Length: 151
Image 1 (cartoon, one colour):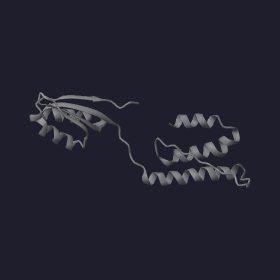
Image 2 (cartoon, helix red, strand yellow):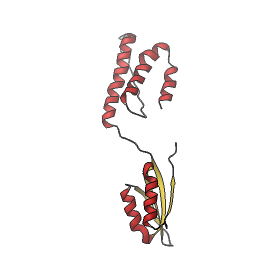
Image 3 (cartoon, one colour):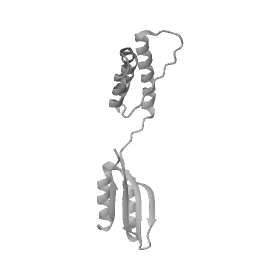
Image 4 (cartoon, helix red, strand yellow):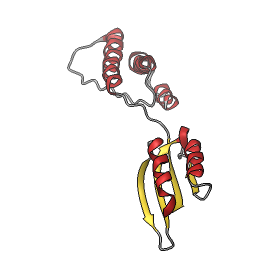
């Protein structure tokens, strides 16, 4: 993300880089936030601010916006889709495991042969532990498939 912003800054004129791009970039870097988009728009009202005034205006506006964003920022954790195929007799143990790992159920289908296909979303960091828990709960009878997040 930052590489994209730096690439955009490098395409600005020297005055724009020093008076707008770099102060905004400094505010983003100082914010401690990741995956941030910060757009500052200045409507010209007839007052010449000079380079120093532009630096304070752009950098200050970005800093204020990012401080407010930090108050409401949400930590995003990578998640993966998991599909568990299990006999209906083993559902109790599987549901306990899903609750334990705070998996979010997306879909559930019951087949004519008595198997149940459960699709859930779970944090990437806990998917292997969930798999082990499901396998233990079903004595290895569950089919457990997961897909890593798309990057």
